[in-house]
Length: 388
Image (cartoon, rainbow, N blue to C red; front, side):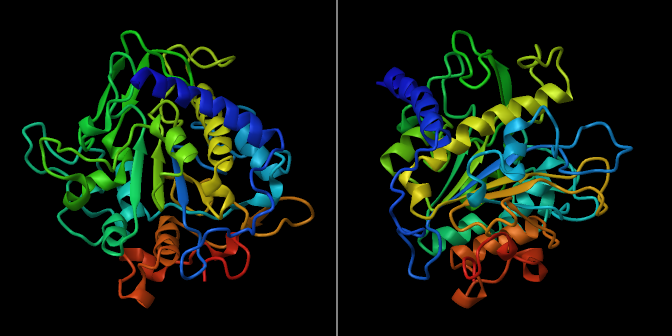
């Protein structure tokens, strides 16, 4: 049964990608919003978290490379230059800033997307617990997004690549064996391959999994059973069955998220380099985005957000982060091209918008979290009335 589930996962990616990018749109006759909550907001949000590259940067900065107009990222750039075939469902930010001056490295930005501040993670990428299970960067507060969602009877999941799988074969474990992935791990599969880049390398980093830095959503140490952290392969099955959460956070491993280069490079980009890491992530998105778009969840008003963690080599306005929205309710095209918002945005804006979409904001008795209280929301990327 497990082998069959894995085969379906790989097959679903290929089939869904072909359908979505070949111009087929499931249930195209439905209203844009389809199934909605009581306030008309989108029921499902899919966030795909990527790593360590600016959207634009000063010309004097050459490493790491920027994403905008980079030939190693043809899929990502097709989304914004009007050549993807889905231009009417795309909008993007041109002024998305780092969460704050000095908010580095990766981990504090993921925590910021949950809590509106870096809390204990500023300046570190450490796992939430030490190896002896004493607390490290774990937080005991319930003032964070996934906790609010649970209190409001909304659901969330954090799909993480290379977790809750057999690390010899890459076959997903039975759900009864899933645990909270509070410990990072990397290495080589013995007999399996990664289905996106077809090598044995795996690399899960807890620092890229925002929910594991809070005791009420991570659980204790040693790791406890949890169904909130499915292996990435489960996403295809859940999209097909409709068994999805309201808020779906998706983190590729450190090769598929553009963080690290595979030891042998990728495709035409050899040897390993920053260029090859960009191409790896672009390939991942080119397969996962169409997979989500071909689902009923997306067709019935879902939103895909492509999110990058931090600016590189500078925190000024000259270093912008990629942030792309894919939705039937994205801002209308301008002159036939996806809308580019120049409103100043950040992870605080992202968090504020999640609170507004899921009705866990001050209108519903919840405080805005941290810096979300003073940030612009993402309304400029959507049709009027979509967020508020």
